[in-house]
Length: 597
Image (cartoon, rainbow, N blue to C red; front, side, top):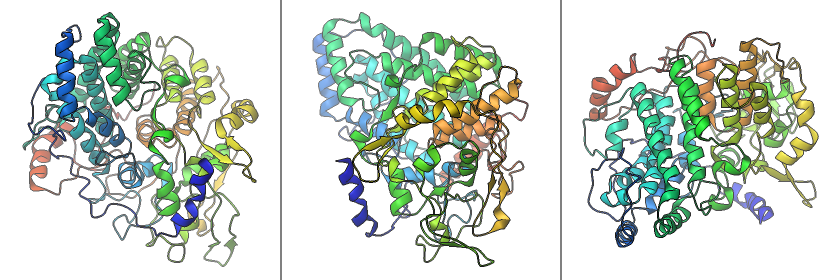
């Protein structure tokens, strides 16, 4: 079956390169939230989880019947897909995924670069684009429009565990977009408010409320085992039907979801280390004590076996809309990391330099520097940058992660480095983060005669890992653009891989975040956040954008305010909550300009 999937690419490539949803009104983050089959809009108490309450068996069956008949619970499936590139209830697909990730944040994190200007809409990868700024918020809008009718439906209070799952999904998406844009109408959205004005909440309020919710959610999950058998049977059946991201919806309890919730709390804690270190320590230690993701079997993801091919494959291969970023190329080459050649192809066509030299087809893995003036065209004949390295077929069946084990290990490594109680040492968690970086990713490719499937996690662990972790100094690498030497630059990486207890904390932190960045690929939301709050990894700086960028790094995405009502809300509540102008260079609440230690 996997071989059939790959072979299908040959005819598909000939179909054309239509990309992006230029005609779609996808960035409307204030869409009305309403159930598919439920015509009435409800306004309940979304933060309230009465987890000690147990309805009668008849009452439970009646609530479930209503929620199913009205297609309310079906929206939980749609929301999970929307959080990772789904649209209109469908599985994740390239159009929505491209707007959510590829057109902006993939570039900012240093993973990918757009090779073309999208008919002038993206002159460079740091351009403040009114057409694309709403992409990430648009995906969240899809998710919240599925989730808030469930949260506010009166019958959901009879099933507090399912309400807790719904609230956790809403908060997971909220944390992501808050760290991308800054303040947004978190409370109004959660309350299912339908009309302007929408009040934008500051990040301190959003973070505090999410963590308060997580504490209630995890208490609900722990209490579930005390419920009557008839209740547990029905609720477990609901979980099995409407949960598509946990490791095993049929496990018979909510233990996986509890670990997911605490892992989100740990992530948020580490984002606050420079703004509120005491609170960050408290949250982090509470999360670990309560239980976080600790094994590959506990990771949260949308599996390719369920949703099909990863959207990046179409975006890269069929549309030619994303290419390897020069920063990712340089750092991976400096470490001689074998994943680079596994994940990316060599140049697909000749690349000609201005002085007449040529980089022949299939000569090298080569990325594009972010921030360059983009060229028009998706075909090689019109735009030579299409020939730069694209993603290989190995990522076709890559699972789409929601919370990865390696991220949790690296979070614990950083917290332990700061002296917090994480149940182990920074060195131990750092080592585990690297060792489990590709566990469960499902990235593979066939060998030359298609007689076997080569899975990168097994090949990497068996052949390369020990040598990789012994690297004391990164190799001196110079990024070379075969088309224009003016873009050449030495890799800025300063640290090796090997853990050394004699290193100072700053060096250890750079190692942790750099390896976390490599392991997190291609999840750019978290990578960009780490980059902003720590300065690591050392990617190539960019000085373009809206004129507000002073340190080579974009700090946030400006709001999308095409409509008059949106503009009024932004001016009245968003800008005061942001605490600065609506520009790319404005730092978010947790993004403090201060030393890491």
